[in-house]
Length: 373
Image 1 (tube, helix red, strand yellow):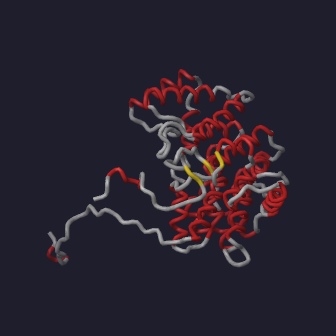
Image 2 (image 1 turned 30 degrees about the vertical axis):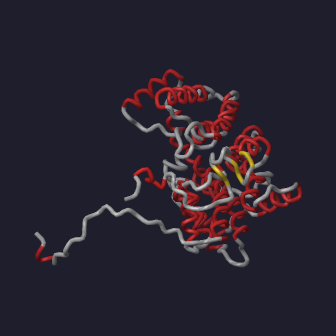
Image 3 (image 1 turned 90 degrees about the vertical axis):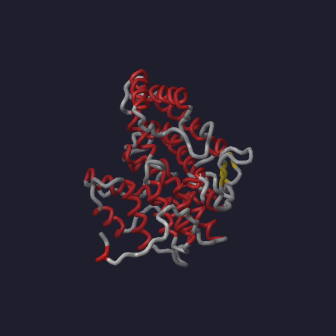
């Protein structure tokens, strides 16, 4: 029988990867050997995207060419805009991205003209426009231009969202968050993308598999749930009383703990700094001490630490980003990691088909319909 400890494949090694490692062999989280702390402090999201997909950090010339390429790939095809306009206004933004990526795959399918690396870059460049074209069309009846002229993905997203030059602190906070969300080894959505890839399916299908998996609150959707939780409270004392009641009622507190990390999530401390920094100039500054009190209480009562999603929630909120766009931002970042894993899976592919432990009825005789009581 299968060891019960392996439920959800916990602790089971299912393959090799040279893309990232999550706290293994004395190493913190790193992307292709580079510490997440160094990348978050010194790199841009575009540098990290290039690193994940191409295997090495770009030099100045390569980075400039890559940024220019991404800027040229932002404009959406007219048939895709038509589909985005047809998606109902009440649709969750994750479903908008799932549909938009799938539709783009019918317009620009994977062929010799559109290589895997080209598709990866196209999706990195165009997903902000997909989401925000749909958003503004249904919110304001506006057909926005999806090429802002902003130099990077973070500033491009904020410009399209707010329609004006973004605050530089907001841009860097978002840029750092995109770096932190970009890759995380064989997480659920990445594994789903690799399973799809292993069937020799196309690039877009693998990406859509990742988006569908990230949609769930036990994976990407946790940042939205964390914001909804934090926003319930106006003071740290309110938060402590509310969380104590939730714990007594055995309610799930989103944004805490992690399947892989046992002591802390190294990404959390990095994004927490940005949450605090942005709170200082916000009329909702109280959300940060509320978050800190929740963090303190969860450690004291449950010995659980915040994961990346918890302080990302308030960081995004301080940037004026609607809560239901938090997980789509995760997609815009993680497309880089998914793409790297799709390319890696294809290099040495074998169909991913695990065994299952059967626990159903023992073999039994079939009874014709007229003999069943």
